[in-house]
Amino acid sequence: AQSVAQPEDQVNVAEGNPLTVKCTYSVSGNPYLFWYVQYPNRGLQFLLKYITGDNLVKGSYGFEAEFNKSQTSFHLKKPSALVSDSALYFCAVRVPNSGNTPLVFGKGTRLSVIA
Amino acid sequence: EAGVTQSPTHLIKTRGQQATLRCSPISGHTSVYWYQQALGLGLQFLLWYDEGEERNRGNFPPRFSGRQFPNYSSELNVNALELEDSALYLCASSAGSWEKLFFGSGTQLSVL
Image 1 (tube, rainbow over the protein chains, first blue to last red):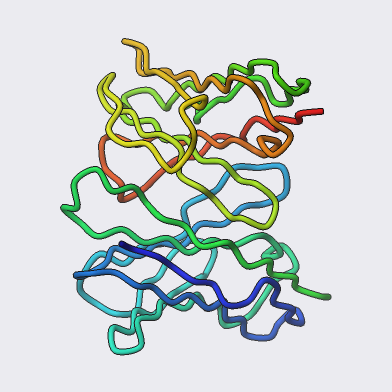
Image 2: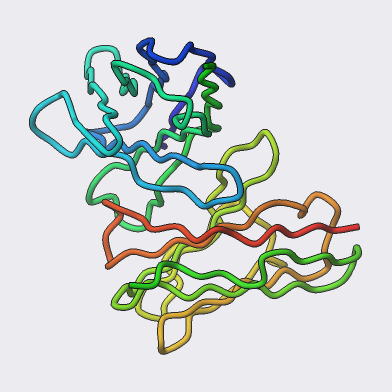
């Protein structure tokens, strides 16, 4: 079975400071990992993905994430937070070529950037 | 290009009634996915349709059902509504791959 954990329900950061939203995963095999963001009253939007290759993945809006196989983590980062980054962030995992297994999401982390 | 559209935006039902939620995928997308977003539970996988066929369903009772039409739009039906069915129901589509899903804004179902 595959699963993903987001250990923090809420992350608060001051505008201009770096931000990190944590994600750890559990799968059998090599994972595909994703980050999605949900703004108020909206659906989820794709931010970035790790499929293979470079462990540091760059995505939309200046976000990046680092795949760490030994720690089974895929933390989302941004060097300088903006108030407009305040939203709900979801990490997701899937094992490629796993047939009909769906994309499994974490419970989400609410990011609040304070001016 | 139009994104994934869901209707209605809000739906209020009473316990025991039936609800029908609709989803139109992005043009050219053949796969449709349904997720339930209940407070504090994150996104729970409901159903996956691809090319008109149900590929997988999540751990939900049989009163949750759906279908995909020849134009790839989809419908989610929830029978015998219960209070705990109150949630945001999200539909997503893709061009047959899990590598990038496009989500609609959801249908907020409230069961009174």
